[in-house]
Amino acid sequence: MKVLVTGAAGFIGFHTARRLLERGDEVVGIDVLDDYYDPALKRARLDILQPHSGFTFVEGDIADREAIAALVEAHPGIRRIVNLAAQAGVRYSLINPHAYVHSNVEGLLVLLEAARRLPGFEHFVHASSSSVYGANTKLPFSVDDRVDHPVSIYAATKKAGELMCHTYSHLWRIPTTALRFFTVYGPWGRPDMAYFMFVKAILESQPIRVFNDGDMRRDFTYIDDIVDGVIAVLDRAPADQGKAPPARIYNIGNHRAEPLMRFIALIESTLGRKANIRFEPMQPGDVKETYADIADIQRDMGFAPRTGIDEGIPKFVEWYRGFYGV
Image (cartoon, rainbow, N blue to C red; front, side, top):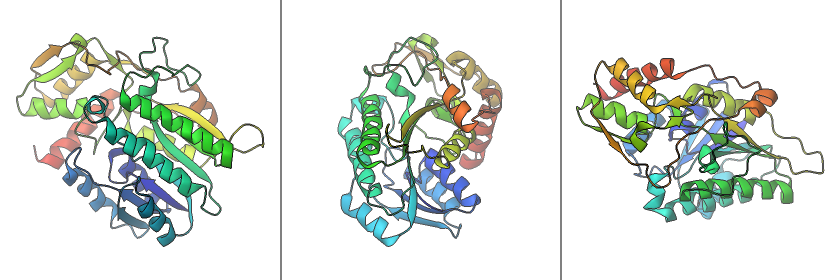
């Protein structure tokens, strides 16, 4: 099976591409390698993928119509797409909203247009986000909840992406699945994520910023569990029974809302150092709590997250120390 993985040098894209390659799939990866965070980390991920004979990398922008057209022409036989390329980060969307529309809306449109023209195309899996739930206070968050009130530009583009996937399923019967990821963490993670910044700051004896006076909870989901879910979903496209569009949405999380201060305490314990905490007010676009109802993906895919933060944080710290030589 030949799979196009966008954002292949990114955190989730890298892990997904590696899992596909390890099981024998061919992977065409594309990534723009921008400087939103250190491109050296992205290239280090690619260095692990490149030795696989089934891997081909294309440096390019998914919103570039000519580049995507050239890619699918040069690599015939793509049957599935896992779209993990995106401009990430809630707070940065307040600073540079154009980047989010470019990657998360225009880029998705280019890929959907390419998918509907691919012969024998089977399934389009798209990365959405728990951010679409906005300030929803009904817990846990269910895919049946209304998500019409995003509180960040990032969330708005992710909601737009879900609607676009549904529309292409309706008009052109393309099987699509949108996955609402809940706070993904683990080795090879993103340096803009809180857990990454906390570890870095504590090791460098720098203060960490903790918002809403630490009164926050997150459904932290370990990267291996996320990839288990992505692969399971990819292999089971929604059936087209001729009536409703072959489109679906799943939450993919750990089904556990962990207090942020417990998360920080676990990092401190793993590092053997105390954090210098600076408490600050809630930031615009942020939410107090996330908590995934994963009943649907459990029922349909047998998804069962296995890694809690007590195991996952030490694994990340071990990787961080090794990668950065700390």
